[in-house]
Image 1 (cartoon, rainbow, N blue to C red):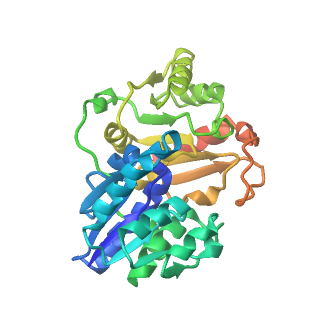
Image 2: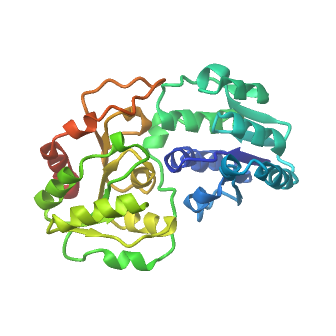
Length: 330
């Protein structure tokens, strides 16, 4: 059987969906799996032994140049020549549903009540029901596994094997052999999801370990350099590609970061982590023995997130430090 999974973006969502692969392959070892993804996130999937082909698209380019739609339609139709037995839209957006329609006739995806863009469900022959405000990882696992007749339980997800892979890269030379290595993820797509830089400094100085700060934009680089200039223990990593990011996180002892893609990499790599939440719901992740969350006191509406909720600033440094010490000593 040959299937195509459409999960275009973003990084954290792709990681949350990838957990299903080991279980659907375990159920059917001969299953062939292709994954359609935005080209900017393709390397997140690289190295996964359960994926036969990573098929990149650039649908984001259409926003800037509408004529790009012709190019992208041709590309997806080319992928459709792989003759898929089933196409699973794990995204639940109109653009992903249309991509799935171009890929094959037998399609599955979320039901109308389970997604924000309900019209997408009309493109699926098989519809998967799960509450829109249910745990994000459970949602991704179910939409991929149920159409294949596989049930993935919460315990299975807790017992998962690490599923992000990387090659040896030079960036791991930044790791210390004398101190514990802690990764700081200081940025995200919304400013209100970012923990204050001043508090990151206090955490670094309280832990007194080798703190490495990752960054992805010029604004994040400037913030990283500010933190490093105010802390004895924090250092700014050079700009690294996603393979290097997986590597440095995979070889570290702990990650502390905002609710964003690189932070979720730690969960996918079975690396201890603390995810800091303000305006977004904590059930975007699984809390485990090594993957912990700290949430501000604000109430979150899953259906209408408040980008002006800066309550993440309330999270006490002491709470982060105590949790971090417990994970580092475990």
